[in-house]
Length: 405
Image 1: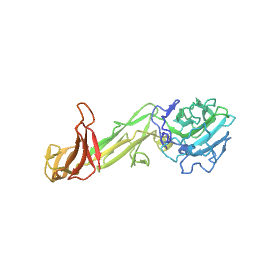
Image 2: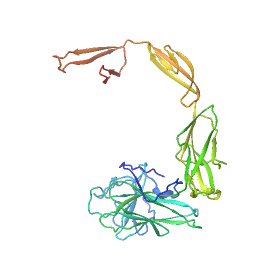
Image 3: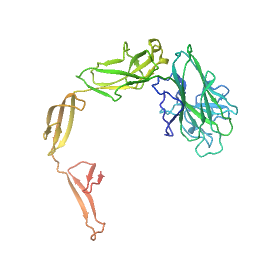
Image 4: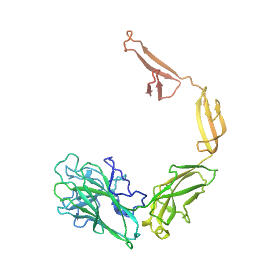
């Protein structure tokens, strides 16, 4: 799922509606970000907008839509429309651009199945009014979110602020309900205005608050003890909480279930230098835990396994002092020091130090005294620097730094 960040217009994103107060699961509706491609327009009709016609030569007219990654490169972009990319960090990420029909009706409709009954979900989408700021006498978009054809939430008029906004709401499936239809309906008439872009349609499980505390990264030593991670759950949705701990190589994607890790605690016992990312997924009971569309995610916990040996190579000039912990060195050599690092690990630092003789760097200056007392027409000019290699940094007595080649 693409992150909520504007590409070409770095605007803030607002969240409007009755949204999830606990933790969310992964986005069940993976197609909701419309994908990504270097082609400016998706050439095949995705067939997701009942009553609307798909167009591959934008801009779309009333009653048409297109999937594009940037309105700014369209040759015929309407002068009142924003030139923007989609609402993600992907420069080729697609968004849906809709020029509303003259008649109100659905402009997005998809079915989702294999859900869990009696489970809370959040349905949200990013929407932007495509009309530029300052343009007057244009109709503002107004969108209703529907579940199985029943209106659940409306955005109200979406102002033309040149800002993406995230609209959404939460609801619970009924007993025995395992599938539903998600729809978006245009409530405003077409004509002058009522033009919008849509991105990051998201449908996620919404549950209790699930955390691995403290949230800050944990640091342990390579020769230390294993670390126990604790799952903390706050709320009343899950009377029989079921856990699945997961691991990711980067903390972003490729999350993998850890076999047999189904307790409220997990022991990290890998004492090899590196970064280790964990989270746990939570569901109400073991059966729901088996269905990825019923799980929520905790925060991500980073465990750093820190080294106890450090190798440093450095150079100083003769007459200078190099300090390691409580040791001070003024001569070339290989030195070994033992101390406790900032993470509390007993550490050994191996320092390969080279002391260079002072080359006797000398600066030749051209000095022009002031013509009179309190007259600022004097100058000091660097004419030549001997026994050194450029570039140089010159620090004058007034603290100003100059650079010369």
